Image (spheres, rainbow, N blue to C red):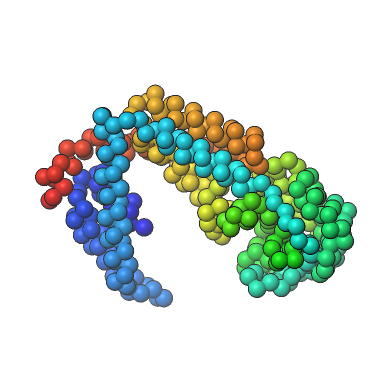
Length: 352
């Protein structure tokens, strides 16, 4: 957590490793001291140690990066753009739907160990005209798996229950090995859709598709029709006649393949912007000239276009694009600061 703090200290003041450790320990100790007065929080020596190490890592990282930004260094911007390209194409592949060879089973408001049970009820549910049973094998062992890999529509008549504290399945399809194939559920008042992707097969995390606030207008006991359909790379969720469509995953939300975290839509949107900023920052930092920045940026942009065309991955939104541009600009600024303060990293300065 204190690695960015150490990085900032190195850029702003040109301090060495020992000073970074001391500064990180002092600031962390101050933070820990304030937690003594906060109910439910406690101060620990371990946090101080780890934060001091984080500050040291930040300064060490800056030293490593500065070695790549000296005038005699080679152009590393292409490498940064290639890494960006590799991640985008990999993330695109992770969004490809994946079925299994096992028997599929339908479930209505199942009681599962790893999520709360939805307290509403289901009147009926079907996928492309095929009944999804309350609990038992699906009637056509081959039609359902094929349908989920193509264009499909799932519809359920549901009696609304209380808003669950986390994702709760309303209608779900699992296979005989208890692997989740598809899930239509609720998280608070959000309508949530999940389906099995290549990411699941590779034991990675994944984002879900949400219709934020979809169930807010309805009181408990109200009967509604929930539906989700696939149209190309887009998933459209609806409550009665109100529908919202979005890709199953987007480039800016590809962080979710590493670790999906809950929270509000605003929180997820902020993470999207920060993720693109982080992915694009090395392109600006490792570019020696504006021309190299433009060339590397063009390669990264081409990767985004290829991923959008060839995979189910959706494009970033305007705000996320600005985050990517800000990342390149921030990288250029850090590089400029590193070069300006290069003299502070002479052996005599670093040993202070």
